[in-house]
Length: 156
Image 1 (cartoon, one colour):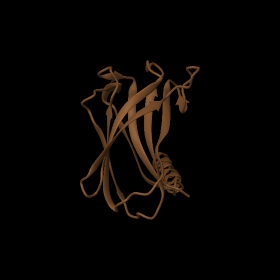
Image 2: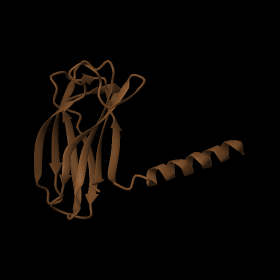
Image 3: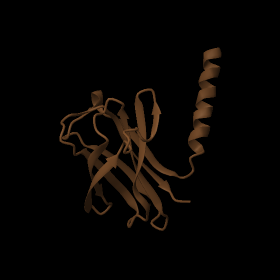
């Protein structure tokens, strides 16, 4: 019975914490298998935009281990709009500052970065969007990238 009470408690706390994030429209993070991101392995995220009059911030989430050998990561980011049209960006995402200190939040040897991709943007169409990442580094597979994700939040 005590285990069941703990389970209920953690479920309620998790729900309460999740509901406190009123700005979030969408957030998902995906594991990179074995922490080695092959260039051919695309990570895709789909979300729906209900309102074209609202401004949104779009973030790219990257989790890396301390053993990651670079200060940045290059990504090809393809956005597919509800009408099927696409746009493609090449991003240089900084993970370390000039002194070599990891940016973001660290726990143990893992570092979580939430990198602003599109600030204060209005989506031109309501409907389903797809954003796809490809790692564009010269190392393949790229070791010590453990997770990547996408966050879309309302600007308040």
